[in-house]
Amino acid sequence: MTGIEQAIYNAGGQSALARLLGCSQQNVGFWLKQGYCPAERVIEVEQATGVGRALLINPKLVDLLTPASI
Figure 1 (cartoon, rainbow, N blue to C red):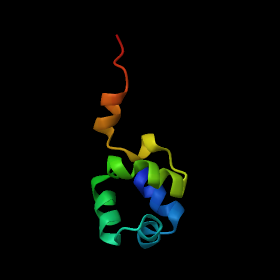
Figure 2: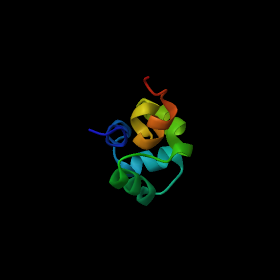
Figure 3: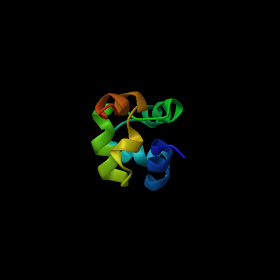
Figure 4: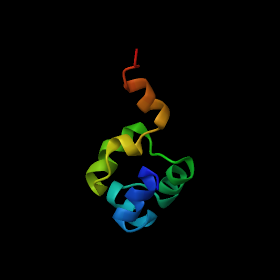
């Protein structure tokens, strides 16, 4: 289960998460389809659902923020 799937589950569905965040269900559906939520919404989703930001953000961004092993 992806982070956004877990967030949707914790919130009680796409519409419920959208209401918590003040956005449309279509926005949440798009995030679900892409597998992550936009970086500017990560903290808000984390606070609303309890799902950690590392699970919600685009995996490519996580790689940029993690120090490379040498």
